[in-house]
Image 1 (cartoon, one colour):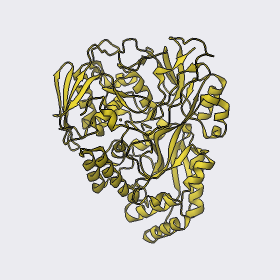
Image 2 (tube, rainbow, N blue to C red):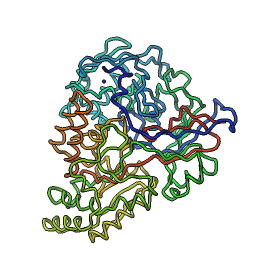
Image 3 (spheres, rainbow, N blue to C red):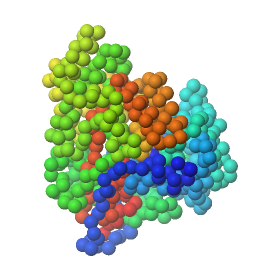
Image 4 (cartoon, rainbow, N blue to C red):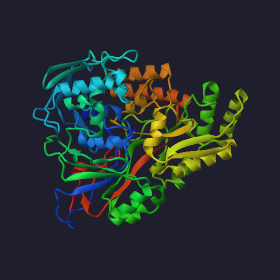
Length: 539
């Protein structure tokens, strides 16, 4: 998932998205490098998208990385997570419930269509309609007219005023709504998309800084080739000729290519290189805080994990995990044990969530809780954690499994799938029969983004189908607050409920650990761990 967004003009949005980040790592001086070649192609790592490239049906990092390069929304986020107007001229409101959005003139899609207000409204309506079964439909639930009970083809809260103006009316005041608008679910679609949406997803027509390099640019399970879109007029000025993303089956192979000079930028160091990559790469190594949360989910539909028995078993499993040991030994202190369900780099983060002692290793208490669950229904079977083998997860999954074996005296193991797309499809289709790795790379810099999309009833990334009316009510209350401080307090209270229910088992917060080659410069990794590819230069 995006894995992996108040007077509410885009400039004033900065206050709502204030972050506490370490400085972004950047390229060294250019004195020793040849002059930048504006036509040079930047190479980087990625993963095969789970689905065709439709913005409202992409909620994972492989597809998200591509969409963010080829589309432009109303705003984009800079390296520090601050929103900057992209297609929007202004986003205004008097009451945080009705917003007037004006677009800049002269922007086009790569097929020559003008980018208009209708393109945004049509795309949002498509994403919101239940019949279209879009994974990100949840992002439109605050708009007037949205329904989970029946298909709504046209949201009453979306009105086109003219070619460059539309209004959005929400069900209640929502102070952080403009902050969300850089997320891919809110991208516009050209009219051509609706002629054959399936074909469009295989060869999308965007309006962003890059575009697909013609027919056949996307070689499934191998790579995708993007080139600079000369017609893009937004703020993400491209300083190179294009971007080729290779879908590596193993992170070790990507790292080897980086060391050998065959890859320009790597945004995920394999755990086998954690102890050496900084010495290998020198000042080209990146180790910086990012808005990434890691966990694993145990759906209630699994045997022994429903009701009170399930709650006890989740708490036992959580307290049987020695996060300090794993983050030190396996991750070489490039991860930080979780204290909540969000991220320390997001404004409003707190280490003092009520009930978070359940995230502290306590073998004696864990066994007591497991025995209490056994008194309800004796444990049978094997506990497994599914994960994608192409993502560098085997080490920690094996470590967690061994800790569960030793503390709870059960049979536990990992259940690898070859690719991220494969395991995500099983999760999305609800055909998976085990616990499974989960994680969240923030879509926009706000606490709600770590909570609503993942744990609210019916949310698009609620992979474990968790539902708690009390939790939902606190989320809604927080969204309706007029101050960020009050909203964050509600979101912290909502997390106290999650600490008791544990819809996922929080593990750790991840730094972005990456690096880049000798031929590139001006490399910056953003607040959410994604490199700002458009800014990279290459000799």
